[in-house]
Length: 488
Image (tube, rainbow, N blue to C red; front, top):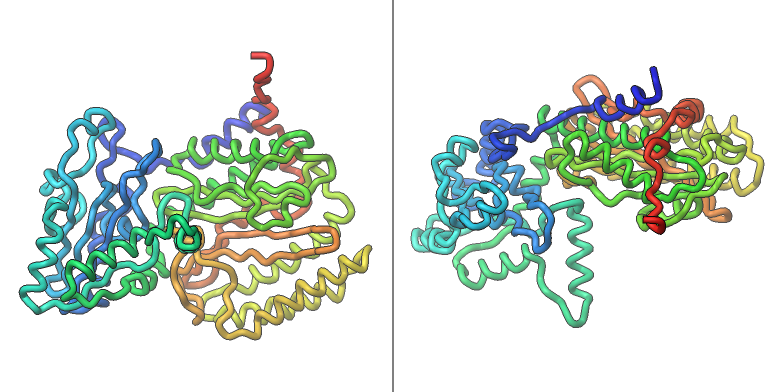
C-alpha cells in the first residue's frame, strides 16, 4: 500500500453518517425509531404511577455561535432537537405532550427549518408523541391538574442537564462554582425550574426524576450500543492517526486537531469532552488539557479523547513514546502495567460483581508482581502500591471497575450488583511514581453481553511492539506541515 493510500484509508475506514433529510436537514433522528422512544416513556409511566406527572425541560438556544444540542434526558425520551422545549408525561393517561415555541420565520430563513408548535401533525408522525402544544400554554395546562386534584405529584430532574461536552459531574461542579462566587450565586436552570413550580404551582409535591431516568439509561439498547461502538471506533482511529503523527517538536494541540479531523470527517457531532493530550510531566495531572507544550525526544505521551456521535460517547486512552521507541524505563513500567491491565480485562464477564472481578484480577496482579524486576527502588515501590491499592479496592462490596459510558462520558446510573448485558463502561487504573512524576494509564470501552464482554477498543494496540509499528507509518502531520504565520 502506498503512503497516500494508507493515509486515505484512515479517513474512510469508519465512514459513518447518521445525518440525512432533504437539503441536508434532519428534522428527527434516524438512529432510533419512534417505537424506542415510546418504550422509554412507557417505562417512565410505570415508574411514576397513575397519580403523577413528569416534566422534562429541554436545552435553551445557546447564547453564542455554536450549534444547538439537545440535553441528554430530553433527547432520550423523545428525540426532539428543538430549543426551549418541554415534555410533559401524564402517568394517568400514559400520554406525552410536547410543548414548543411558535415558529420563528426570520430565523428559519437564515438557519433552516426547526420543529415548532405549528408542526404538530408532523411531529406526531415522526416521534409518536401524542400531543403538541405551544409552550406558552404549559403553565395553564399544569394548573388544570391542580384543579382536578387527581394528580398531586410532579417529577422533574433535579440535577443539571447534560449538554455539549459535559456530563452530570461537570454540571454539578459548575453549579457549585457559581454558588461559591460571592457576586453571582445563580441557581442552576434545573433549580430555577423547581423553584418556579413550587412558587407558582404549590399544589404539586415536586420529586426528583433523575433516579428513574438514570436507572433506565444504565442498560443500553442494541441501537444505543451501536452508536457507542461507532464513537469508540472513531476514538480509536483518531488515536491511531495521532500515533502516526507524533514526533519530537510537535505541540500537544496539533494532536487535538488530528483527532478532531477524524471525528468530524466521519460524522461526529462534536467532542465528548476536551482533549487530554499530555506529554512528559503534564501527564501527572489526569485532566491536563491546556495542549500548549512542545513535545521533546524522550517524552512519554498520554492521549485521552473521544467524540460525541449521535448523542453517544466513548472514552479511550493510550500512551506512547514521542520519538516512536519505548526507552528502558518506559518498557519496564509500561510493560508491567499492561500485564496487570490485561488481567482486569480478562476477568470481566456478565453475572459477577465488580468486587469479584477485582479480586480475581488482584490475585493475578500479585503473580505478575512477583515475577517482575525493576531497575529502581521507586519503580518497585510504585508497582507494589499499584497492586496493593487495587487489592484494597476489591475489599469494598460497592466497588466499581471504572465508570459508565453512554449519553455522558461519565454516564449516569448507580449499580454495584452483578454486571448485566447492556452495561457499558471503561476501566482506567493508574500507576504512579510520585518521585519522578510518572503517570501511566490506559482506558478501554467494554460492553457486557449475554455471554461475555465485548472490548470494542481492544483492536487498537496497547502492546509495545504494536504501538512502535504504527509509529513507523507516515502520519497526517507529515503531509500537512504547519503554516508559517510569520511569513504570510
